[in-house]
Image (cartoon, rainbow, N blue to C red; front, side, top):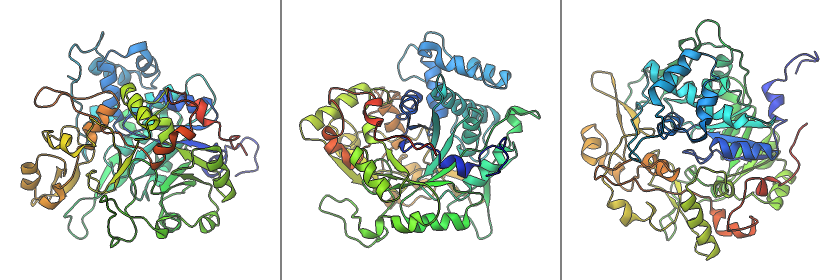
Length: 489
């Protein structure tokens, strides 16, 4: 960092000033602006989930924007004409009359239309702006590397909103630091799109030019610190060697953390008696080696207690990331009926989690809370008609003419196979996109006229939640964020 008193701290220096407690970025819309704001006000790093925010914001506007929060911050978007187009297109005064009958947004492909890009940018701007409103705490955004197509435009929108940190996992985000560098200068940025069946030497890139949104006189933005969500010190070392731009810190997730887990490093390890992947010593980061890399890091997966924080800091960590406990707090976007149901299971000693190695179309193991009446029940899921109408986890593949097609192992079987998909990939796959939208209270209408059912994800710690929260009848984020004094060096 420069010795000049007027110089802005570097992203690396800002990372060392981030709080000891980071809120997990749980999507879709579980880590909403209300939760991120509450955590930030309590002294932590509040984190919004950027996954699916284009649809989340479009749906909230169509529901009538209760309280007028979205319309208020969208009116502050630095390009008024863009804000006006978003509100004219998506806002429904009084809300749609048939619940779930939302007007669909476009699936984001590698060359999205300008109206799709505008929605992505404004949605991420708005969620960050709402989370930062009315206090001076810090707010981050979490995106999934596996959900590639929306990410560059989403990052730019978050930066326009003043985001204080970017976190990304579910893959190896080598290009993201460089993307942040270029977006901070309002330059075109791009990511390599992984295309199944691509020929040697063929490269497809997702490109985004900020000038298509802000024109030639862009508003000021700054380059936020980048925290890579990783599972091992080996990956941390590899990112520091090969990343385009700088990695400013790490969140180290163990296999007990909720959501997507990394596959076990020993692929030949047999499954346990329940059919779950088995993790061993090689699946835990060497914290001594990690500390020697000279970057701050936070530990995630079962550290959401004062004792967990003390243990993490004794091991050299700057702090911890907590998710499951906050997902069940009052401010999170998890449907209230599901919160009450999960807390009731905890109270009765019946809360459990299954690490499903097949459920997610990403191919990553996915932790599913065993909640009756949800899609965690295989019999319930088997009755669902397959449909792919959201498309965040689709994978691009090469057509014979060199163009791109898109397919998802959770879409209708015949369609997937007709697109050249391997029938073996269909086994056990679930439509995570629709399920998580339902979990956040925005279930779409099914082909039969019903409503899509939810799927709750949680870390293994959910079974011991009673020891970590003040009341199983409900609690606020601030009640569980006070694990220690935030780090402000």
